[in-house]
Image (cartoon, rainbow, N blue to C red; front, side, top):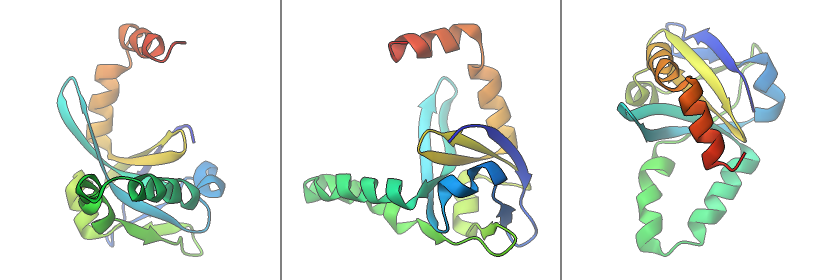
Length: 145
């Protein structure tokens, strides 16, 4: 999945799925918490996993010793299965919106075999920090490109 899509949450916490991602996400998918570390610290967002990607994640966790798999309790325990309505909207549960700090304005970003949902302000700050020639060059070098 690729691209950046600006959207808004309605008063009920629903968002429209970007038209270009609908086929890739499929008729049902999972939304879960996500985070990573960058130069500004910890970034929080939500991740939309198509069913096939979610199954691969489950399979990887199933192969771990139970002591390591327990670390995924917070991911699986806070995930939501989503099925878009006839208008291609999904409801993002309040606890997930709170975790990611989602306000009215959000950004959906394609990320290979999944998509991330960011609060618009957090995404714009990250983009400003990381969309530099130096950072792009470092990322390409890291990936061997």
